[in-house]
Length: 187
Image (cartoon, rainbow, N blue to C red):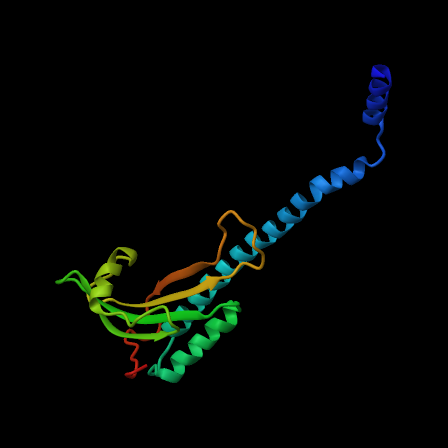
């Protein structure tokens, strides 16, 4: 009896038919997860690149502006931002125009316009907190600051705490054509 069991077990373990099925059952879930995870990570980096390019585009357009900026202009910039970002989540934007004054070593907010639900209008207190993020400026130097924010929604739930997360951008530039960009109030 012992010999029969040993012979049966030897034959059973020596058999190779069905091995592909067992390997497939073990490997396919990991292979599919890695494909979905790779696509999700790629998609998040692609979305981040779109966000920053769109924010730079809005800042560049405003830096070349010669006319007064009004609510329609800001709405159009927000629509442009949404179109460029092309995301599954709402996009928020804050555009501010700052003046640096050397005697006080601080920034004054000349105007600030907000679209979307994340930001409030920038005030002088917020500009003081923002100072470490801004470059060194000359006395009476002016700067356009564009802040954008949207939530990245992953196309697949890949686990490991990779949930939806907020993508924010902070872009600044100096006016290129005219040093004084005026916005109507309210914008």
